[in-house]
Image (cartoon, rainbow, N blue to C red; front, top):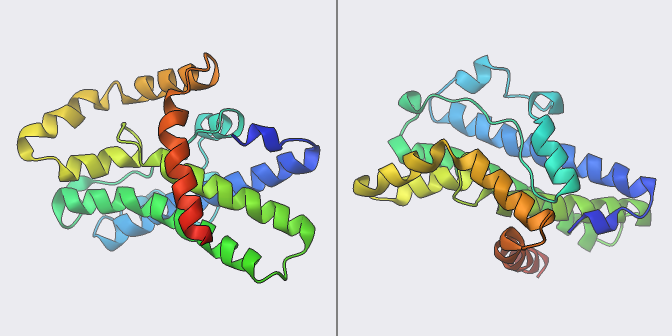
Length: 206
């Protein structure tokens, strides 16, 4: 999706800036929510920080850069210390994507003022697109993505084993889906993500 934007070196710089902003705020939101809900593990691990180096995952960043799908370094937290049980864990999971959507909305509002210089307008557009993409992708219910935490919260006790069963294989499943989508051109992930991406962008822009 975004690789088509790379027509010159400046586009790559814009993409890298957008990547840093999106992942940093995404992971910081996870950390702050976990601390707010009673677990200081992210604070002890130095994740309550605006320093991008605390949050960027080399593999996840590379995938987001070249494949259009990616992730940040997971924020560690102890579910036993989180208030409200699995609903608290779901809130921690949801906070990252919701923050990305908020960041995208703020930059859309800035563009709508009409006072943003052209060169920064291009950067703002890339930031908006990357933040929405990161939000939508992370809401997929595949471990270790945030959507799996939300899925675990809404499933009844009798179905909890479904999430636990795929937790170990989740990263492998994810990489296979990305490979199938980008290398084999099967478009499995794109067919799921693109309609949601377009819907969110339309809502935020309206």
